[in-house]
Length: 118
Image (cartoon, rainbow, N blue to C red):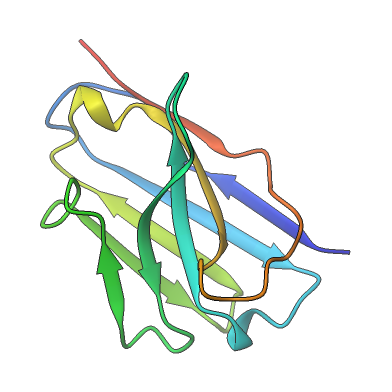
C-alpha cells in the first residue's frame, strides 16, 4: 500500500524558513525521481522542485530558484524541501509524489500546509 506522508509545514513570517519532509512507503523509493508540488487555493497543483533517483540532478520552478533546496535520503525513503526567504506567495499546501516524468502512483498524501504571513 502506497503511503506518502508530508510534514514540517506551519505558519512563518515573510523571510523565514521551513524544512518539509516526505516519508514514502509501499513502493521502491530509490527507483523513482521524486518531486515537491504545491497547490494554492483556487489554483492548479504545480511542480516546485524535482530530484533524480540518486539526488544528483535537481530542477526548480523559477519562482523558488535560489530559495528552495530539494534533497533525499534513500536509506530512509525520505525527501526534504528546505525553504528559505519565504514569501507570502509561497503559501500553499505542499505535496510530494513521483516526478511528472515517472509512472503515476495514483495516490496523493494529505499534504502539509505552509502559510507565510505577518
